[in-house]
Length: 418
Image 1 (cartoon, rainbow, N blue to C red):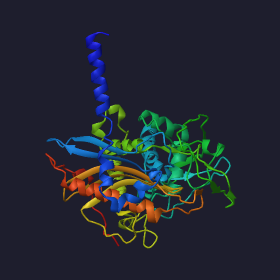
Image 2 (image 1 turned 90 degrees about the horizontal axis):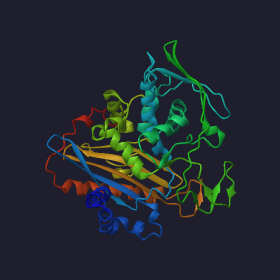
Image 3 (image 1 turned 180 degrees about the horizontal axis):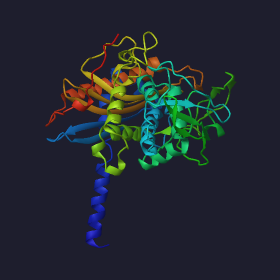
Image 4 (image 1 turned 30 degrees about the horizontal axis):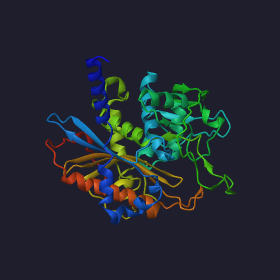
């Protein structure tokens, strides 16, 4: 082999290695806090924990530079992503509005969903919105504020299964597929069919989206897609067989953080790898990702069903009694189902100039029975995520920075918490 070719291969190999997340730091950090993490660390499977933490350092021009650290990160080990799939779907819905190039079609256009296949449902009203009518805007608000399942399903139907998965590949999300609605028992042929939808401006039709059928398959076979010893079926009958999730959505931890990083820092990506969003779209998503439910009016979310830290697993643990720290905002999307708790977050402290990305999953299902709603969320999963977020935050508080970040683009005026 010629010397210059050998040198080039060496440079490529070193560059590739340098881009891989450090796998030592987080392990040592967890081990240094046995009072917080010993139960997880001593568990035979470590509760299927995967963590990706990314430090952000700004240069003199406020340009962000990233360095990542991981713990047990493994795209080949499956976990059920639950509601985390809602964020890319919401982004793709906004993209589709732009790419249709239909005059008068906006996020606020009235969106009337019809049905054209088995188990599809119609939607003509939305009492949570300011005008009582459904729209892309209000569905996205509900997804970002409280992770509303029906709102996701409506956006899934608008974008269409094939387009969602085409976009995932466009954005190099190779360990992700979104192939079904949530919380409605969507399976088989039903997942391939998406509803016809009509958009209105007042009484005037501005766009009709026809019913679609996706004939494509998106095969993925990571480990762990068949799990446990039993499950409850749709009639709540115990089935003494392992629970099979091989046809479900897939969304790896690394892909989740990539979606969030591309959303928050578009200028860090090549032009053709940025989302097709306007500055108003970005501001809209940032605003509602970081709003506590009790700060919002229309949709309105009140205690006790909703509370300020609702859907803020990292740092607050989803604690209904948590005292909110006014200088900290969390831009995130969570998921919880089948014993898995996941949070994909950008955590900011405006007062102390702290910012970092943190994405993690943890699971607990001690009896090995799935779909029975008997999981250790409150005792294992949420405390772990809360402690993880706070330990990383404390580390970031002390981490020296040459240039303090200007975080003005992420600051919004919020209503008082009730």
